[in-house]
Image (cartoon, rainbow, N blue to C red; front, side, top):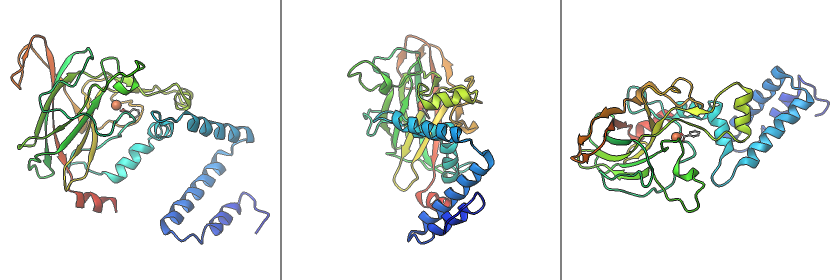
Amino acid sequence: MRNFDQFTITQAVFTRIANGQDRRVHEISSALVRHLHDFIREVRPTQEEWTEGIAFLTDVGHMCTQTRQEFILLSDTLGVSMLVDAINHDHKGVATESTVLGPFYVESPPEFACGADISGDLAGAPIFVSGSVATADGAALAGAIVDVWHSDEDGYYDVQSTVPDAGLAARARFRTDAAGRFHFWSIKPAAYPIPHDGPVGKMLEAQGRHPWRPAHVHFMIEAPGHERLVTHVFVAGDQYLDSDAVFGVKDSLIREFTPCAAGTAPDGRQMDRDYCHLHYDFRLLPAAQAASQAA
Ligand code: BEZ
Ligand code: FE
């Protein structure tokens, strides 16, 4: 086969990839070729635009390091991460909704007893966070693992610190008690711009977009026999709730960080200054249901 033109080349590629042994690889490859070719036929890039596109993807690759994953940022900002999440985790009305993991999760975070203050040396407005973990039917899940992480009052995560050997902060793992509950103290997170000093930042600028995410606390919750939940709780009233740079906001994940006066806090701690209280009750989908939804 030879002499392909813009009308025959797509079929030629389909024919060339038809003999692969793995059906899923074949399905994905054919859809990729079909959509890529249709995209090119629609956009009709000049040779210079195509070169620029290749240079952009090359820059995205060069920006990646152990601590910076520019391809995930590209997927996040094009809404692809949330589309994959929506297809694989359709929890609405059944269990707590999920959202993007983001790049700032650290495997095996330090474990604390409930009631701990996880803010380390960080300054900020105190928050008391309480919650529970239950099955989709509302039965308490004791011993569930609750990982939390969030930004400081300036919108930075501990792992973004430029101070050498800066420790982890505003990040922890808790286990729920016999009633499926947990609680801890920290500082109020702030809205922050996603890393935008690389090619994805340039893309956002060219698209006339801002890089900001509304303030939130990340949660990753695991319990035996249940689907792992990756989600955030967003601060009600944040100015970026309707324009999150990564399209991650869902109404069911927004909560008031209720202002409370100094005095005896819900866990008995004597607070000498005002604080905010965030409460969220999480519900997990059974693992079997998660598997059948994904099929
Ligand atoms: C985050 O919430 O940590 C995050 C998510 C997506 C991109 C950048 C940051
Ligand atoms: Fe975040």
